[in-house]
Image 1 (cartoon, each protein chain N blue to C red):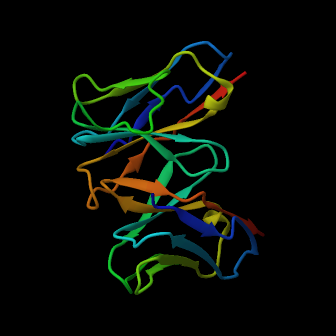
Image 2: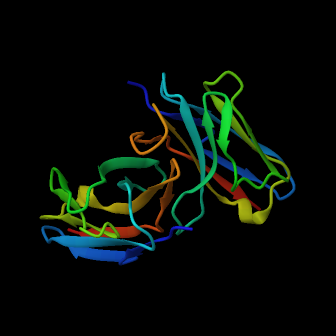
Length: 109
Length: 115
């Protein structure tokens, strides 16, 4: 079965700094989702990547799927307190999504 | 557009008791999902409905968990009897369609604590 490993598990950055979160799959990715979750809330869709080398941006968040389609990275530029939360990557497999364990992001003012 | 609604938001029960969760998906969404999210983990799919039929329930502990979506709209998830390890957030999600083109919209979840 497909597994996703996210790194780092937890991240603390100073407001204004850039950061990167990685998601590595045990199998080829045919669809990779990035979601954000705040404590006590549901998941909010950020973006979906399907093609090798594809890159998408939403406000200050950019996600990329590597050419081999086994790894994705999510990059936040000039982080803000509103970026704090848990970032989850999910792999599209057999009409369902398998999620990684998430990366907890804390932003220091 | 109204989002996915779930109730209750929080529930505390003792082990061996029963509990039920309710989900109302976004209007027009044919696919409904129930996930279990244990603290520190990503969501795990329990069951997926397409309209009122079950598409995937391979990870649903059927000896104690049951779910239904009788009219193809709202859904209930039941646990009977609950165990300590069932403590988790139960998330409901819906999508217009299943598969890679179906972005899933999540509700706020129900946080279950089993004592």
